Image 1 (cartoon, rainbow, N blue to C red):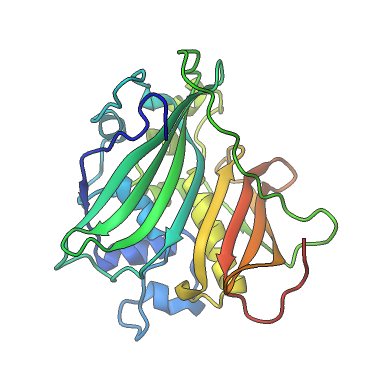
Image 2: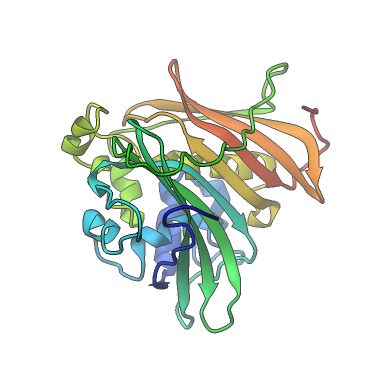
Length: 309
C-alpha cells in the first residue's frame, strides 16, 4: 500500500445482528422455501447466509434506520479530498470466508475493522476509495470474513492523486455455453425490501439522487444483485451449503432499474485452488448490458467439472 490515504485505519465499529436480521437478509436476496435452513430459525441447520457480513458496515449495531449520508462522512481520510457521499456507487466487492457466523451476535462483541488500501484519481469520471474490512470477534481476535470494497465517487476526480493499479480480470469462457443460467424479475419493491438490511442509501428509494447522478431515477442496490448472484451460485453449484463457498467477488458494471429482469450465467472452469474450484460468472440485464462483470467464486461443487478455460 502506498499513496495518499493508504494504510489509514478507521476506528473499529461495533456491529451486531439478530436471528431476525439473518432471516430478512435471506428473504431479501431470493432464498426459497426449499432452503429453510436460511429462512426458519428453528430448522436444525439454521445458518446465516455467508455474504451477510457485507451489510454490517451499513447497519452497524442498530436496529433503527441509518442516515446514510451522515454515516458516510462521519470519518474523513487524511491527505485526500473530502468526497461527496451523495454521489457514490459501488465499484467492486469481494469477500473471503474464514469461519461460519453465529446465527446471532448476542453474547459476543463483533467489530468491523476497516483500513484504506488506496485512493485513486480516475480523472473526470471520478475517484475510487478501496478498503478492506475484517469482521472480528473482539474478545478472541478471530477473523470471520474479510471483504474488499471499491467505492466510486462519481465526477470527483482530477485532484492529482495516483491512478491506481490495474485490476485483475476474470472473464468468462467465450467458447462454450454456461453450465448454469438463472434469472430474477426485479420489481419496484425490490430495493425497498433489500434496504431494510441496513443499506439506506436514498439512491435506492427515491428518484432525485439517481436523477442528479445521471441514472434517471431509482436504481437497485448493486449489492442486491451481488448477493442475489451469490445465492444462485451456492444453490446451483454448492447445494445451498455455506461451507461450499470460500471466496466470492464481482464488479458493478452498469445499473439495474427496478423492474429489470437480471440473468446470471456461470461456468465451471476446471481450475482448482486446493479443493476449491474456480467458478466464473456474469449477470446481465435481459436484452441489455452486463451489470455484474468479473464474477469469480471459489467453491466445492457437486459432480465432475464440466470444462476448462
